[in-house]
Length: 250
Image (cartoon, rainbow, N blue to C red; front, side, top):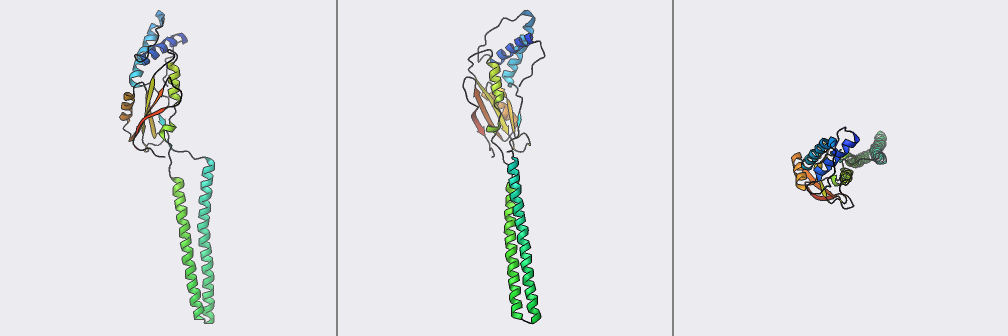
């Protein structure tokens, strides 16, 4: 949110009253207050700042959001265990293949020693079949292992409309409601989405009273996807998705 000058408590109250009025006018009629002469400058300064915020948006505390889906430790451990077991299966298959092939080779050698060519030939063929079957089995398990690994390392994202923290809009509404109750106004925030920006796949604009101003602020980001959200000051509930364009990943 916006930062305020380090004025005395009394001077700051008049500054903030002017800021609220400058931001809300002319959409909302803010009651006039009697400003002591020694605080007129503070009030006028707040009025000008509020008009600037109305034109360029009310500052937000958090403008960047990481859309990557987090992995809990139980999920990481489970995925690691599955990969470990599948890797063990590949090695076990290869071990059994070598073991059985060695037995077949031993039979072939024994048959050759006693001069049983037919038995030696059969043992050799059996050994070849064992090796081929073992290699095919190991290859299949290795394929499964590669597939599981690729799935495990694939980056998943959360929807920007879900990740956006609407508490900033709520805080602004609470701030503005201090000069006008009930307050009937719709506020807008834009968001630009770019999945090639680590840690800031979602970048949001300041908070505007005007939807077109928010659109222009998003367009200035030059990001491939965007969204426009709104929240009314006189209605309960969360933000509303006004529009979105481009591709959002999950």
